[in-house]
Each structure stands twice: as C-alpha cells, then as structure tokens.
Image (cartoon, rainbow, N blue to C red; front, top):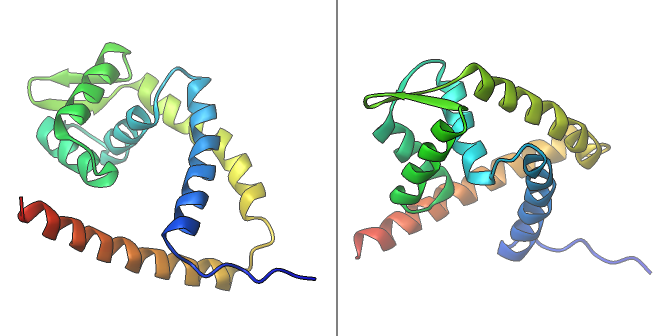
Length: 149
C-alpha cells in the first residue's frame, strides 16, 4: 500500500521549514550564533559594503517577520561578537563575519545536497514558483493586517 503525497498546505510547508531550520540551527550552535544573527549577518555580507543600520533592520525584519527592536538588538550582538562593525549609522560585516557566513554555507551545503538529492530539477522549479507565490500572498495579507492596527 502506498500513501499519497500530501497536498501542499501551511502544515506541510511549516514541517519542511522547521526540519531544515533545525539542521541549520545545529550548525549555527556549533559556531555560537543564533538563527537571527546569521540572517542579519548574511544580509550585511551580501550587501558587499556598509549598510545603514535602519536599512539592515528593515531587511531582516522583513525576512523574519519580527520586531525591529529585536533585530536591532541582534545587530548589536553581532557587533559585540566582532562579526559586524558599526561606524555611526553604518554597519558592515567584518572579515570574521564573512568567514563565518562562508563556513556555515559550506557546512550546510553538504546537508542540503543530501536533502535535495534525487529531486528532479523540474519539481524543484515548480516548488520554487509555488512557494514564491505563497510568500508574496502571505506578505500581502500580513501587510493588510499590519495596516489595520
């Protein structure tokens, strides 16, 4: 007897997200950083140069759907760990921060390769398009809820 694949819904998406996130968080814990710190640091790294702290807070808040004050505190933690530096309102990743992001990407890349192994490229493309559409619609719903108060 075979079991039919579940229809994509919030639960299925959530289970996949948390399974992958658990792998990432285990890797991050080995380096003494949190998920939120890694997201903020990665934003600083991909910027390629200094970012206005407010812009960085906005980017990470948008990605994590969290409180800006929490994100600002997370940036402060990165500065405290020497993974980012702040010069007035400008924040940038340090060499140590860039090295950490590269190391985490390499470590998680090995896990990702096994997780995605054997899934046809066409299936991954469809999943990417569907999840992108779901994300955009959820973001629009959240914006509507936020504007209501």
